[in-house]
Length: 242
Image (cartoon, rainbow, N blue to C red; front, side, top):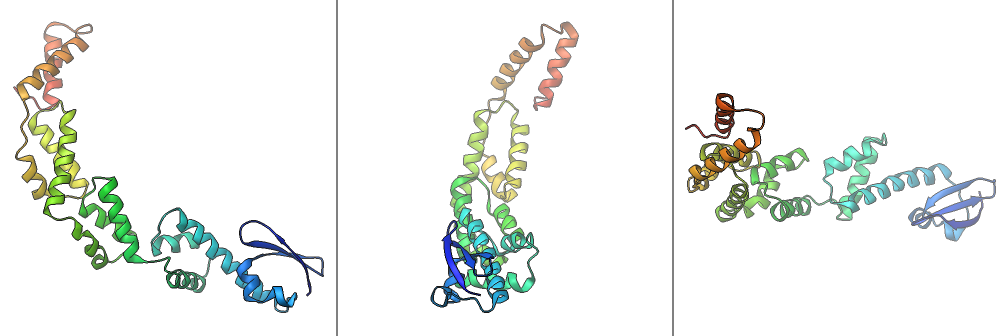
């Protein structure tokens, strides 16, 4: 089949018109690989179409990873949406690695860096998330060495101080809530407790303010014993026992 003309059709693609009245949408790299610009002829159409289809998938993956770095597991899942064979997936993954676009160390380093500077997540949560993405523990542990004792203390204290600003609960309730939240954020219980031991809260002042607030809120609906019991219950829920 003779090639009559090429018409550019979007980024790095051309519409190729043939002498049999048909046309193909081919990637520029495919055209170059098969020397179509020189020969102006297609002899093995099925091979070219097969290679072009694989290149199309590779191009989709490039767009996918250009938005943000992806793990191998994420890319496999993405390709599976297109009902791609295992051999084709392996081929695409191999090319990505060859082009240094699929690099575990780079991905993990970038992921940990973002978590350190853009969140307060701790090492155990970060590690759990990376394991789910398909990375090995030894790969992850190398990058998590950034979480030394000083950084962990700094991040825990930052979270505690942030919570203290709006706190209206008793010391007991506050400590338990912060402990649970920080454990869920990926910190060790003993590291959290070390920092919580130094926390002090003026409970009498907080209780007085909370009681006044509750009284103002409910005095229009309740009075007498009913009001006092409601206030007592609300204070109890916030950890004020006396």
